[in-house]
Image (cartoon, rainbow, N blue to C red; front, top):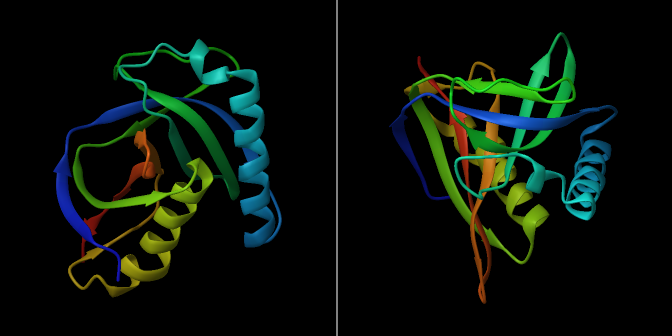
Length: 156
C-alpha cells in the first residue's frame, strides 16, 4: 500500500485553466494527458501569477460533469478571469500521498491510483465525500518528478 498521512491543512485556493472530461476512465486519462500536453506547449501556467511554481492538477465534479484543471496556488482572495476558475479547498483533514515517477503524468497517475485504488477504500476512520482534490509537482531532479496529492476527508 502507498505511504500516506492524514494531516490538517489550512484553506488554500488554486487558480485553474480547465477542461471537461467525458467518457470512460481510460478515455479520461488520455484526455488529461492531452490537456497537459497543450498546457505545457502553450506555457499557459507561466501566465498565472501563483504563490509558488508548483503545477497543480485538480479534479472536480460539478453538476454531474467531471472538470479537470491545471493551475497554480494563489491567495485565497484572488479572482478568476473569464477563462479561469478559482478552486477553493477548505481548511480541514486531508489524505496526503507522495509519489515519484519519470514524468509529470506518471506522478499524477501514481498519486490518483494510490489514493482512489488503495488508500481511500482502506480508511476506517475517514471518508472522501467529494469536493475537489488535487495533485501537484513538488520538485524535479535526476531521480524524476516528485509530487503530492491532497484529498479532503471527513470523519466517519
